[in-house]
Figure (cartoon, rainbow over the protein chains, first blue to last red):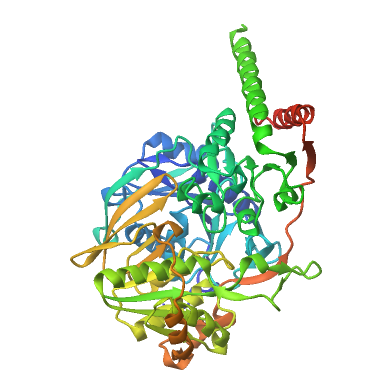
Length: 355
Length: 265
């Protein structure tokens, strides 16, 4: 902030890696475990301690122990009724105070609706360097500084970013860009709970309600996402794509054209003006693959595309491209998938019955 | 009601080309436009003015050429436009951009509401809106999906999160970043275009603002881009023709085998 000293390195040592976890109704979210996986790797590389920070109303002891088991050396649980739901002012105020008092060198948050709101608010206050939506992180051998790698210009280039003089070094990390850390029984660590003073909890925002999304599978949580593109032709044909999605237990997304035509609602839009997703499997049905769409899905682990235009750009980022009429392909593929899953489940239950 | 809309000029994203040798963006011949996601913020501002009256100021930071983005905003119906342009701002990262824009808003204010797009389609960070709120010590609601309505000293917004819509009451003045769902941007009218052509775009330079010169531009930026490179193309698309029943059967079987091998079934 103007008139204050810059938080540059060299004044007092900044040490350690913090990950800012997320919770909903006291339940720790998966992104927290992904951040622990990222943070553990970085902490090991620079010989530092990893602290998992959680902010909320209350947490069960088991949930905090679990973060230690997954790789944190310490857990800092900040608890107050005012922190039950994410509101940026009280959460940021608590974290700014804690960061200024304890001086972590690296602070990671999820590139989620929470993290992408919270991290820039904190970075502005603490004069931290912040890089958005990183897909890779590393430690530079010579300097021990954080290297942040992220897609830029709609995923057309990758940028490698450093924070030479400012601390902490902050990054938001793309959800699902790494596997969540698994618990290792027997790991030990320090658990600290903290009740923030009243003046940290001031907020000018009141949460008056919440309307949960009606979908069974949210786009963000889904391991598999099937996306309908303009090639489906009309709203009624979305049901054909939905059948394929159901056969894969997948969330149903849509391209911008499909949303703009009112065939599917905006929260399902994948791409530059919608959501960025990184599922294990993306299946594009009648999606041509405009550059704006590719920006939102090309870090998916596996990509299958179905399109009747052999020159559709989606094929350039696909593992498998089915070149054919989706209305001919979908019924056959859906039926075979249902059979395959049925067989797989039957095999599993036979296995389970074996002594 | 006095509203500020923050906009950014960006390269038109479908015309972006990357130099395969250098891995950098080819800027020559690329059309520059208002960040498409800012158009939703402009539209929300216009709809609020239609309902509640008031004045809308568009503010941008960028090179002198960014003036054309501000004229585009004026052609849609924005009342006044201001460009923070100074060679010393060049190379600013999101921290410095938020810092400069916050100083400009202090200078041009007070505002009841500051509206931003969710993020810009070139940098793709979404960090400037919340950053500006922090610099100005204002509350912020991100991912706002409706045109807010107003109560005494507050606005009511819906905030789109991963699993639904939060309903929030935010005290004014406030910063809101809006998503596409909030409104459909109108097209400029002929009269708007004429007005835009003659509109005066006020310029703010570093000395017009209460900013620390060590905290702006490339040298003031906490982050540094050290390298850009092309993403690795690791996918070799296996094309499966599916033009008759036999081919379709075969293609479907190959997909299932692919999924089974990767434990995706």
